[in-house]
Image 1 (cartoon, rainbow, N blue to C red):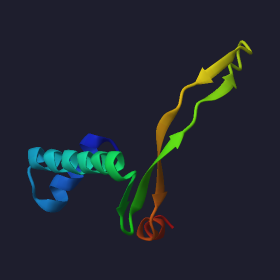
Image 2: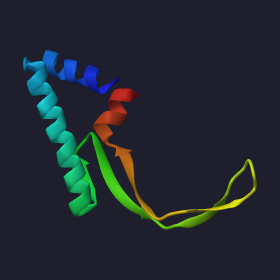
Image 3: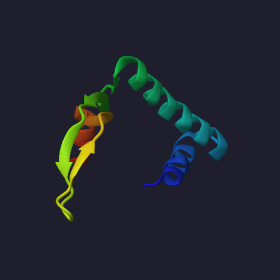
Image 4: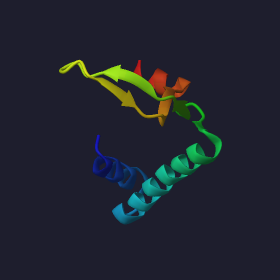
Length: 90
């Protein structure tokens, strides 16, 4: 499902206009981003938990050339499905 499909779904389910649905979706995504920056964790009870984790730099090898490459430190986001989401998919 693309962002446009999700906006159309929100509009159909809530009766909001597509413009309002887009703003609502943008607000949710902005809130998750802000929460991850501030608290490193955002929990949507029953749906999922987003967690920001620091990954240290590491040395790897280019499989094509065999040359050593340094992968810089970064912050990665992990998503763990909640009970209601797992239930809905199974």
